[in-house]
Amino acid sequence: MQIRANAAGMDIGATEIWVDVGSKDAEPIRRFETFTADLTEMAEWLRRCGIASVAMESTGVYWIPAFQILDSHGIEVVLVNARHAKNVSGRKTDMLDCQWLRLLHSYGLLASSFRPAAEIAVLRSYLRHRQMLIQYGAGHIQHMQKALTQMNLQLHHVISDITGSTGMRIIRAIVEGERDRNRLAAMRDVRTKATEETIAKALEGDYRAEHVFALKQNLELFDSYQKQIQACDSQIADHLRRLESKANPAEAANIARAVERLTSPQQMGTLFKALCAHSPGLKPAGF
Image (tube, rainbow, N blue to C red; front, side, top):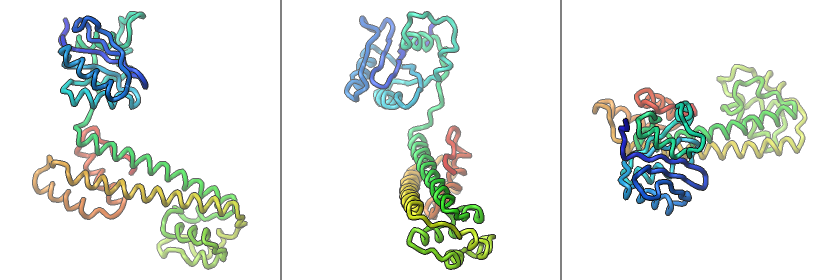
């Protein structure tokens, strides 16, 4: 027995979308291109057909524009894991994907994937973008380590993190032309476990111009990503301030004060982890 009489199925690709509305139209299966004007036309056609709910596979990112336009037109969208649809037996080989999705959806055989509230979806997008920036920046840390190794500078073996206070001071001095290993070692932070003598020994090597150039360029790229991460943190903090609080007034006030005090990625990460602990489906990305 069908439990969704006003259901449609949608097969989404990069350049075209196939939609099946069953018996709701004389031409039940239509093809639409993925331009915004075509997506709007598709949503209006579904409204004219009386469609209340649409099932689509949540593959890649192609579904996002269609989801947003359908949602803005008041049509329920059920995001389906492609594996779930394929695991249901009984599909005919000559049936289009959109027909199969509509059929399964009309009988209530498709489970909807999790989709957070709009405000949390925005926050999740920011967090995923921030994670991507961190990953790209990490690649340049590896390239800096490679340049150091090629010059037989063992800095990354005597300090735990070359992007820490000691490592950054020494690397910046190297790209600016400093070659005296004792003066470089003297830039050691007092909290560093390795002694000046150990660091000085690690900085004796072959400062070849091509490797110093590679070190310099990767340092600049790393710095660029750190600036982008800081800009992303500011954008996230602004969004958090605009979020409607679901906490009690005392907890909301504490969160607001924490957002105002954000001054570093570490503090940002601590706050996000706390928020994620109380927000189902929101994962702390990049911390």
